[in-house]
Amino acid sequence: MINYTWNCRTVDAYPVNAENNNVVYNVHYRVVGEDSDTAVIGDFIGTQVLDVSDITDFIPFEDLTNDQVVAWVKSAMGSDKVAQIESNISSQISEKENPTSVTMTIEN
Image 1 (cartoon, rainbow, N blue to C red):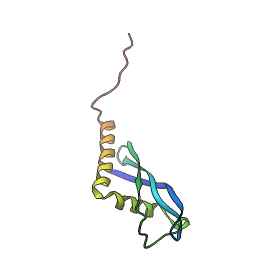
Image 2: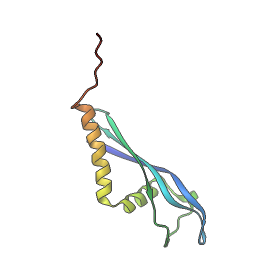
Image 3: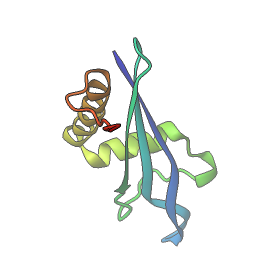
């Protein structure tokens, strides 16, 4: 089984946006997947822009948590993109565990 950990702690924010301060609009994320049986890992790094044009339930920056921002990122991406990222990581792990190609050095 692969466990996925989303790190969405690095963000870009507008210092002032409408009546709110420090409004997160872009998230730099890293997703790490680890096979619980073999401890082999794979990862995926990217950014996700958030729509801040109509904020109804603003959360002050100092009250944000990684879990909240992960939820925003996944919502902005949509389930297909989330599944694609996790599938990519799963494929990386599978390739490491059962390589289809290896790099070798000729000694002579």
